[in-house]
Image 1: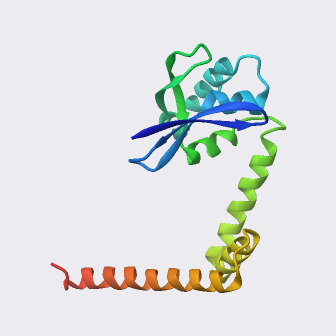
Image 2: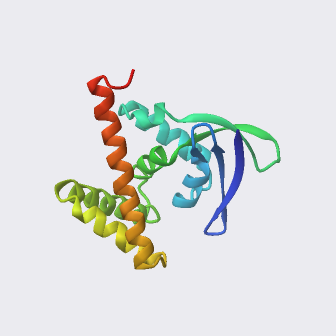
Length: 168
């Protein structure tokens, strides 16, 4: 089941569709380009950018889908869309001052994930900080982290049992 939604960013519309089966949002690439570039013709900007990226061998462009979305004239038209991961990769290719905050954020998240792979305790600390910022109590946070630990233990135990042939 697909559900259409209009998101507002800086007073501009961004068309999106939720695919419940795949559990992904698909977002109109042209709408995002219009916001980040202030291009008078974002469709042409996207067409040129798509060709350049294809010529460079960028697989993100190849994997973009076309879905019918409501156009400004009220009619449904095929529009290139990207899921969140694809969209973040495309934003990295947009030379625009408005895209810079996204690029800095992506670099920071990437750096944090590398840190967490070197020291897994940092991911726990980051999760606790995020939950506190969302207003959860220390008791709730501790319970949440314990339930995650228990769930992972059972999943890991189930995988080991399956590999050893106990499950048939």
